[in-house]
Amino acid sequence: MQPQFIIIHRQVAPYVAHIQLNRPKELNALNLELMIELRDALKMLDADDNVRAIVISGNEKAFAAGADIKQMAGKTAMDMYNIDQFSTWDTIKKTKKPLIAAVSGFALGGGCELVMLCDMIVASETARFGQPEIKIGVMPGAGGTQRLTRAVGKALAMEMVLTGRFITAQEAARAGLINRVIPVELFLQEAIRLATEVAALSPLAVKMAKESVLKAFDSSLEEGLHFERKNFYLLFASEDQKEGMQAFVDKRSPVFKGK
Ligand code: DAK
Image (tube, rainbow, N blue to C red):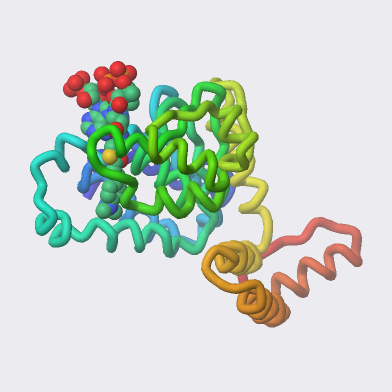
């Protein structure tokens, strides 16, 4: 079935797919249906051998202005419990291939949290990041207090979460939340270029490297180093390791097969 709230471009560049959030009138507010479509699209692309990196964007005006407040407004705690949005978000979190967020305009609340689930973030000069849930009587619920704090540190995270202040793309870059700031007419192109660069490398090494970096967020240094070592050894069982190193010795470009 065709998704209603997202657009899937399977090959915008070699081995690169692009998912565009597409509720422009609502500033891409993340209703439950959109999140389910996004989850299903990511599952499909994660299993597709012709895809090695995935770009997620909104449009120039908004990446996403948060979860859909109108859909949430009347819900009880038991409704929220039964809907169990966390299982959708958890599945998205498990995507093994690299996710690159291309952000322009608003990335707020759940929109900012979705961006922070991605592995690299390219922002346009107009991007604004924020966790304004406090202004509507709640607080971040999909990782905002944790991932933001780890990315930008306590002082700025507290200010953003407790006041709801938005930060600019430049401020986000200075704080270490995002990778780079690009003129608005080029931000998507740059995100696709970055994805293409990663997609040209060994997909096995890329997935294991992603998994290892993420391990740093929920393990002690010793555990993380142990995990890294296992993945490092494991890659010596791949054809891509033989190909990558032989190509270096032969002074030619490697051809990675993901085997
Ligand atoms: N939800 C629903 N509709 C939204 C929306 C949102 N988050 N944001 C904007 N819209 C709609 C507006 O209602 C308006 O619709 P109409 O009135 O035209 O029908 C249209 O988009 C254009 O918005 P504005 O007219 O307000 O546009 P402005 O340029 O004046 O303002 C704004 C842009 C982004 C500053 C403003 O729209 C705004 O403050 N939006 C709300 C931002 C916000 O508070 N976001 C946080 C929402 S709470 C969870 C996972 C995630 C979450 C929770 C749980 N689990 C896994 C359990 C996340 C929670 C949130 O994100």
